[in-house]
Image 1: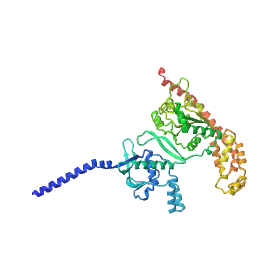
Image 2: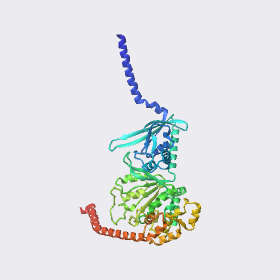
Image 3: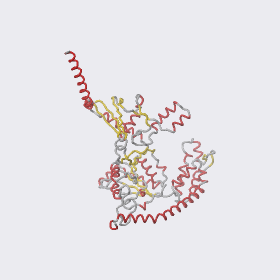
Image 4: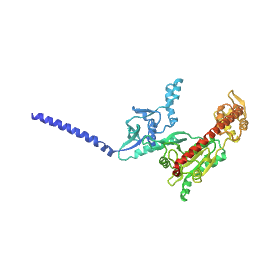
Length: 510
């Protein structure tokens, strides 16, 4: 009997002890690990996540792992950038697949889809880095409060209390990611974050840097602009500004008709200078005064901010004498916009470029010296510009794609056509083409659009240009008549609306 009681007491105490040990392990089990290990965490809503994930894929992480995640972009489903980054880094993987099955149908099917990237799946993975074993843990974090959000977290850990090896890994990942962007222009846009709903700079896309030679503009004008912006970005210029107490900011205004190359020059300059481009839509309903201020405060020290079609914003228009302070539909006023651009707390070191089709409609306070330091006018295509565009489109006839004998032949005027080589004088064709286009009538974009129709035959481009000019001029005249009629019909109602709005705002009339 006593033996039975002792057994029951023993088993009961064992069960209670096991329960207590389990509770203590659950509660404090990670404490010894935290004391013995170091770790670094990165979240998918931060760009450091892209650094680390890209580095892991570059290390052929999938070569020795059996738990993988198939994705088509670095942040698929994570709310990060949706860029076109599956480029040359993934071409090798694509070629390997094509070598396995080289039939035409298989190649055609792959050309319509994005390449697959192999990333570590959720859970813990071990790998070696500089002779040490590190642990990578990938966790999914979900939230279902107001809207469903799904983010991820990467944690890299090592044994020991010194995190130096982890910092070195993150630095290597950062360098590898920046090398990936070499020769490309990265574009960021002000977008709402899925993590907290706040507006922040999100990577939108990256594109190959546009050569300055492809921007058809007067060479002297282009050279002067580039010299000015290079001088501003030189380190000695920053010290010069600082020594004299002058805010280190510089603004540029590109103005002229649509299609004259304003945005093209901005992107080409960014690629030439190695600057990332930051763009924001001032008409966005999600953009508030505080959000815009925060966006400008978080700009990097060295970047290019591009505000396109600044005249399209309702608060930037020229104010009438005695008019009240205006606010846009999103609550942004002209005063707040001016303070963000060059106020006391405005970011320094950035290049600000504003483009407009109608600079005469802008409020003088927006484009005064100090806010806009350099104005560059873009004009409709002159005959000299048409001639340069013709030569640029048909430069393939003297490109490196043909052999030296052909180049020597083409230099003498023997240019290929659709049917085969023929005796053609490209300079004479370019001159004939330019003379058939009325100067300062069409935008460079319109002329380029026409030339692209005949990119394989300069002779056909010259032969059809007169018909194109006549048709385009007739279309322009018809469109102008329609716009004049609409303005005549809407002028009266618009003035009545303005009068009613003034009555509603004026307390003396109520």
